[in-house]
Amino acid sequence: MSSIEGDEGDLTRKQRREAARAERKAMEEAHAANVARRTRLTQLGVVVAVVVVVIVVVLIATGGKKSGGLEKSTGGTTPTTTAVSRLLAGIPQSANTLGSPTAPVTLEYFGDLECPICKEFTLGSLPAVIPKWVRTGKMRIEYRSLETATREPEVFKTQQVAALAAGKQNKAWYFIETFYHEQGEEDSGYVTESYLQGIAKQVPGLNLTQWASDRSDGELAKQVTTDEEAAKTNGFNGTPSFLIGRSGGAMSKLEFTGAPSDPTFVNTAVEKLLKS
Image (cartoon, rainbow, N blue to C red; front, side, top):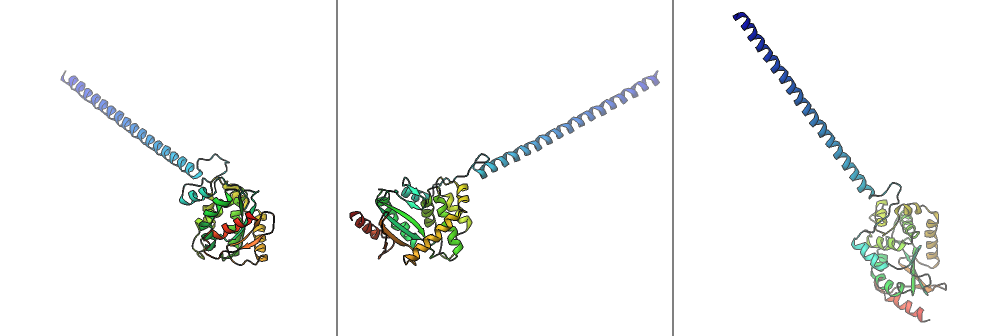
């Protein structure tokens, strides 16, 4: 009797141990499963986060453009773009010309984009000349190229062609004015491809893809050469240099005797021509 009870007690204890062992195993397996699930969720979260970051970076880099779209500059809202837009907005442009094609007076302005005296004239005199004569349709200004300050001929041609390429979209004067506002120190080698790209990006509405393509147009390089030949014919060897006359008629040299930032010499010449 006692033997049977002992066997039954041992059997019961054995069953309890097995049951406990099975319970622990089940709990361990459940815990392992939970750990694995949390690990997978964490990994998934990391992957999702990485994908989101990549998408944001791509959108920022492309400006949200659709694939195959043409990149356009916005012009921004810098002091330079504000000043240039205030001066030029609404005035007709065609190639290198600013002003109405029917304006009775034409001023030919020979310049080098790196010339500091040209900058003085452009930023000093033109803000008075353009509103008075160009915006009112009485005069148009043609920008022409003459190398004086730029030391490397290839750099000169590249920068002048870049301005003329903007003229293919009737925005050459935006490029020219912006360049003079952003002009660097003479002989410092500041005119690089990055610099020219930076100027172009400040031109409001300029199609940068088209601008880049138009820069390879051989006719623009020929125009730079033609301008320099015209300058030599007229005896010009410095910038800025000017020709002025009735549109379609004979042109005469116009020289400034005071500071190039004083618009008096232009105003006097235009008034004289309009009275003739």
